[in-house]
Image 1 (cartoon, helix red, strand yellow):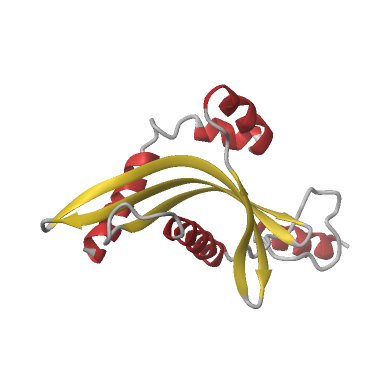
Image 2: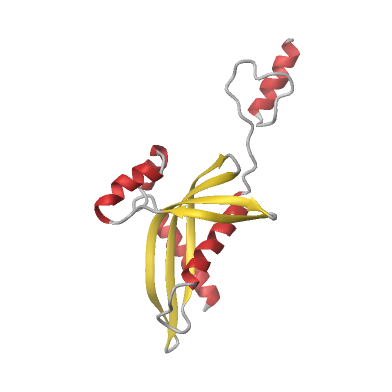
Length: 171
């Protein structure tokens, strides 16, 4: 019995499934969330949404950068919570100019079908007086606490740097 206990505790400490029992410990094996594939699906969703909007300039291009806060497994889908920086740029007289920008938290519902992750729904907080209430209704408290620091913890700067890299590669 002692050997079985030692084997299972060792496996739990190494995030592997137990063989005999959890022995009363709280334990859940890690779930492979395919984070990179989910992020790619979310980026495609956001870019397709931006591309379907009316263009202000002939050669404008949308770029997105994402900071992941939480991926949660729910029944047959995943909830993906992130902060998204979206920016549009265009070229005028050989100079890159910014058309628009938004920085906003999102909650995406992502489903896995045909070996791809696809966004089936998304929610963002409304503007103005509804913002705080929507933040409470959409996002868990632990995530909101981290999101409150978005302008102080370097996240926005990092997202902007990521878009600048994309921008330089594109133009």
